[in-house]
Length: 165
Image 1 (cartoon, rainbow, N blue to C red):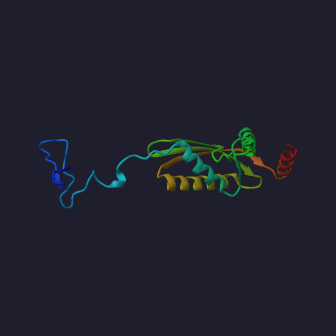
Image 2: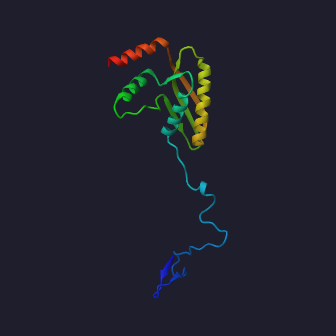
């Protein structure tokens, strides 16, 4: 800390007179704080962040038609139609996030004709890669529940229902 003298010059305060004041000058080669700046402090990642990453990564896989159960998709479709409503990327995804690990539960709807085991494997690989790359958390498990199969003729019925409402 510095003080102004009567003549307007600056002088360093005396640390012996005020022990709370210390010199801001450090010797050559000394650093403030302790250690690498990147390790100072803590980063926490919420469940919702991991759920969004996992939901987007799962939707990118060919053969995944939708996420969530029939009821959650119905409510989600209504929410999507409301002006100002956003698409629920976390629909069908539940994450449990710890300090260094996370576990995920996904509920998906697959397209008819695709191999469910291949789609599940691809979803796991994509989700694990995305979550670990973006968060640095270790993904210990990705549980996948296939709640429905989307049949080709169901698409026509959905379009008609949407027009009637």
